[in-house]
Length: 188
Length: 103
Image: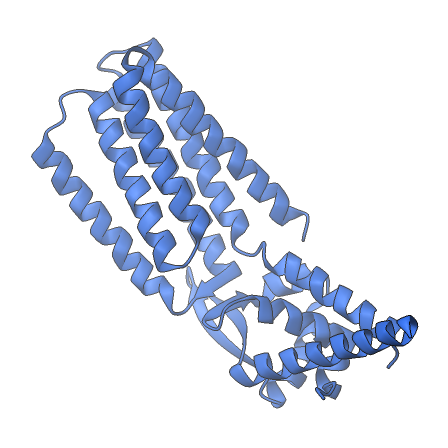
């Protein structure tokens, strides 16, 4: 083998590894798009048209988000399996949901804004801790930044809390998710 | 000096090994996803995976996802080691050629 062939082979390796780095990313992207849409629609409606009918809207949005997430979860399972961290991560999410529900009941938030801050901080906490578990620094950063930004908006921009969180949070999730889906689609 | 591995040297197997080596030890990639990433046919990928499995470089397993059977592939410790020796050999070859040009 000559040096030209060696260089071609090393280029092939780099190309294959850069494509492999996108595996699993499409699922994460779809999760972000789905929950970003739920967030954006739900919070925008809560801001512009408050009323008891919102309970039904939120229920429908959460059901739609859960069904979409299940479909994405099954598709992700076909794409990649994490033999080691999968069961640990599933246990972590179950614990978070259980503790989150308990803390919401105990804290008894009286407004939907308080429920939103609690929920976002739980999701942010879950993202940050699972990021540490699977050594994904981006998840840790997203979890911490999302929580700090939400709490900041809650205390400093309360009158437009729903709108800001809906557009920044939901819109941001849709943009980032779409980019991840596109990035993965370029590699087949 | 590191030596090129004759099994990994084949172009398609080189790309398969490069893809699998990028994932961590416990991560398995679905057969369909691997096929899409590499742009191969089912038969072609199967044949090369069989060859790599025979020499213990990859491990192939089956599991049910949503009641449908799925095939998963991962690199073994031996495969990862042989692949990294192969890459070292390629880099050494390139390095020697670059040095030769300078002198």
